[in-house]
Image (cartoon, rainbow, N blue to C red; front, side):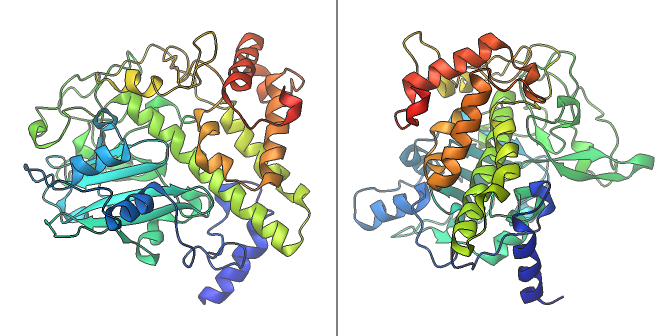
Length: 415
């Protein structure tokens, strides 16, 4: 089928998909989007501008890390966010295996991927309007290091049903197959039980009796395809038995960081998708009421209405829990949406910290106002319908109070 026909079909289905995963892609070249032609203002693009103006300089590190430590410092990304994946979901797949996993570092609006013995760093930045842009930077030392913005070659994987039809981030898990064969891969976020997560990932930390697919290198081993791990793989504090951890800036693949990345990934894709669909609707004079179903999916996710409960305490082994929560902001009682629970759920309060993100604030006013109205109805207790019944009244009230004190551009009715 020709691409023009696919674009037409995607455009016709964009605003009417019952689930956002039903859409293969939203047209990049729609007049309201113009993704490829629009200059980006994501953190990677802004860093490149600083380099061009001589306001920043990237230092070159030993150990094969190249510009990695310097880039993380310039972007303000903590090394303790490091998570390690040994499945081959990368443009540098030939360099990735259980002895040389790919490292990913992230904050709210940027990520950096490092592949040992690889040729490039892989980066993603979130533009407040357009969403995710993808970049690479050659690992070789250069007089003027320059980030290369990637196009269709990367979007073959980074735009599709798993990213809700827009360019986006993804976290996926391999699972064991039947009869000694490799299983498939599927996207994971906080709605997926821990027992079905992290195939193809290394995981350090403790999940108690909650087993998962992490640290099972047989999932990518052709000699033991899809079988159970031959070594203890749960609740590890060290990965040294699998590979040389000194070859990485941190020795961990922290479970709390990985769970946070999973939540954030879908949030970014939801924000981007609804922002795109709103601008398309406004341009095409489509009634905004057509977006209510999509907005409801975003709101449900923002308040963790369908989060898979934890059945025991989760504990990481890095400083990620502390440094992430320290970013705040905090209300007069010292509470923050970044506070973790990790006993029965991921976060202490039922509202995503991504409401503070530039991407959320960059959504069209028409969409953001509708989202704020739904959030107010839920957190104030006005809406007691499914699937919000599980939210405790005290938790709703706490989230409402925190946001009132820490978000400056709330609609008047919130105050």
